Length: 216
DNA sequence: ACATTAAGTGATT
DNA sequence: AATCACTTAATGT
Image (cartoon, rainbow, N blue to C red; front, top):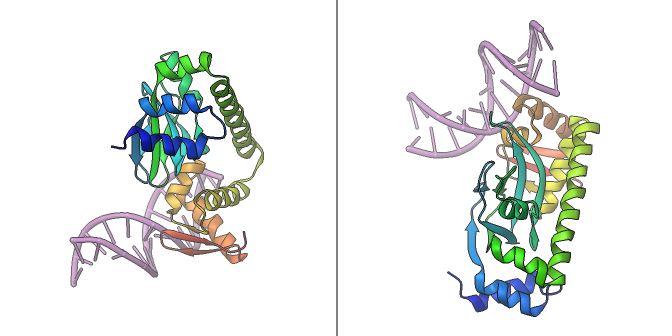
């Protein structure tokens, strides 16, 4: 477990320009470190959250899931970001409406909800940070709705691949067709066929468990 | 060599 | 665009 001085360093590197020093120190003293592996589920639908995570390194995928296990990808959270929605879950004591899955080995800092609520009153920078987070998530949510409502599946697939590449900083995407289908709430067969079309157009190259983007 | 899993294909709705 | 039923290819034991 990291000592609080090193937690402070981590916090300063990610949030030093946004939050005041006093707050950062307080945060460091109450933060719990959580390291996650690829595909590890951080939050499940229906979970009661007692701690709110801020992603420090890596990235986390936020998706909606119904009781049948059907899923749809909403957006990603990257370094220095939090999902302000989880704040509501904590303070209003409601179950999580979303599922959070780690996309790569990631480092999260977890903060007990009672502090987060108090910081809202005590620190202007914290209020701005949280409001900002709400705003970003809202924009991303609208983008997701646009994609689902107005884009064809082949366009969505391309967007998905380029988002993935940007996020993980690599043109090599290590995913099976099945996992992509799950994220886009489609079926494997359809995704396989669309990917094959993209390969024929020269946009990508297909391998087992791997997709190589050509021109991004 | 055999079993398992990922990906490809044609036909049907 | 989804589903079924089947084939082929790649990988693990």
